[in-house]
Length: 151
Image (cartoon, rainbow, N blue to C red; front, side, top):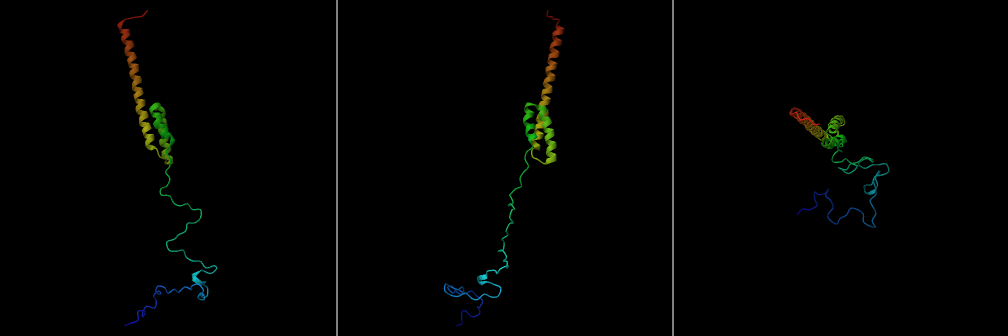
């Protein structure tokens, strides 16, 4: 039979055969420029393990999403005031849409909704005022035509 170790000179030692010195044994002599056990000498730098990249100090880790710009306050005021004071909702809505175009804030939909509600409520109020005036013009005209005079 052949020797099992023949042709396998570069293999690791078998289990239990330790090449490191044990307690009480002397370590092998270091070669020039190196210290024992692969420790770097003074001024010699070692490369970090593969896949390891150290962040420089002071750099914050990246977040998952960039922060979103806030909602324009006038857009919120426009939609709320459009129900109570429609003219204020229209004015705030126009100003808010201009600011949103310039700054890139959120809230364009709120400002547009405030504008639409403000215009609709203003139209309803104008129609009610016109109907009110027509009602009293017709009422006073009917009283004048009847010939009834109050003394």
